[in-house]
Length: 460
Image (cartoon, rainbow, N blue to C red; front, side, top):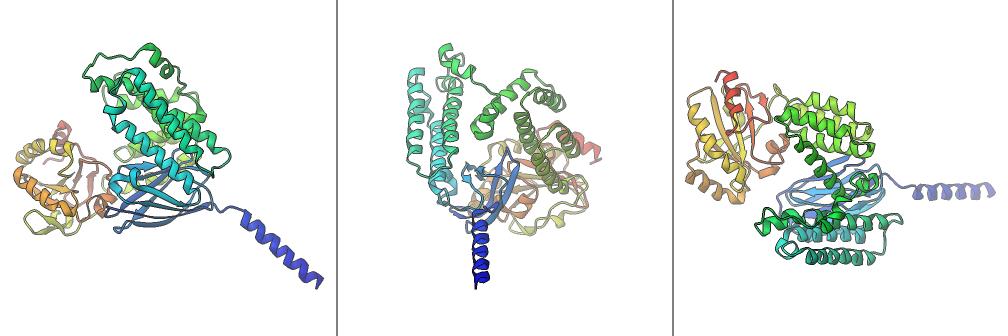
C-alpha cells in the first residue's frame, strides 16, 4: 500500500511538472468577414518567424503556430495589420467583422485578449491620426503638439485599464507609445507643407530638436517597436538616396555599404533581413542576393527563413514550368486555359480596374501589342477584379478598347495562379516561352524600353 501511495504521488508530481511546462505553440483560430478568403501572414522581424495561414472563402481559419519566443507578432491580412502579443501555450481567437475595415472591426478572445484588444485599439488610433490629417496635421506647431500629447495620454490611460500584462511588457508598451508619438511628429513638416501647399515650409528648430536628437541606433527600441524599425529604415534609405545611385546595381552597392557601416549587430541583421524579404520575390538573380545575405548576416533564424523562402521562390526561376490557370473566363464569353496558349511566347499583364498604375500602362501596352501584332507572341491581360465586379471589368475592356486576350481570375488575389506567382502587388508582368516555361516572372512593364530589348533578344 505504501509503495502504491508513493507511485501515485510521483505521477501527480510528474503531471504537475508537465502542466507547468509551456508548449511552444499557439492555437490560433478566427473568422474574417467581407472577404472571399486569402492569406493571413504572421511574422516577427526579430526572431525570423514567418507563417502564412490560408483563410477560407467563408473567412474562417485555424492553425497552430510554433513560436520561438513570447513576443508581439505582426498579423497582416490584405491592407490591415496589427501586432498582438503571443505566449507559448496560448489559445487565441481573432475576429474581424470587415476585412476592409480591419483595425476598426477587429477583436481578440482567449489568452491575453484584453492586452491584444488594447494593441489593436492603439494601432487603429495611430492609423486614424495619420488619415484624419486635416484635423491632426493641418494645424500650427503648438496645436499639433497638443494633438500628439492627447494621443499619448489616451493610449496610456487605456493601457492602465488592462489588467493582465506580462510583468516586463508594460514598460515596453509605454515605450512603444512614446515612439509612436515621435514618429507621428517626424512627418509633420512634410504633411503640413503638402496640406498648406507651401513647398518651402520648414518647422522651427525648437520643434525639430527632439526629432533630430532621437537616437536611431537603439537596439532595445529596435527590438520592441515596429514604428522604430520603420524610422530606422527610412533614415537608412535617405542615406542611400543621398548618394544618387544611377541604376539598380549602384543602388545595391550603396545599400550594402550603408548597412555594413551600422555598428549594432541587431539593427544591421534586422535591416539585412527586411531588405531581402522585400526584394527576393522580384529579383532575377536570387542566388546571388541570397549568398550575399548569408555572408553578411549573423542571425541564424533569419538565415533559415530566407533559405526557406528562396527554395519556395526557385520554382519561379527562368526555365521552370509556369503555374497554370484553367478555364478563366474570357471577355468574349468563352474560357481560356494557359495550356491553350502554348506554341507562342505569352506576355501576361496582371491588373485590375481599380489599379491606377495598371491603367497607366495601358497606352504603352497597346503600342507594344500593335508593334508585335502577328509575331510569335500572345498578349494576355489578366484581371484580378472580384467576380462581383465582373461587369465593371467588362465595361472597362469595352470603353478602353483593350486588345489581346482579356481574362478575369476565378477568385481575384486568392486565385491559385496569383498565389503561386507570389503576387502581392500589381501591375505585374510575366513572360513565358512557347513551351509554357518561365522566361521571367517579373518582366519589364510596357513603358520600359527594356521590354523591347528583351523581345529582340528572343528574336520575336
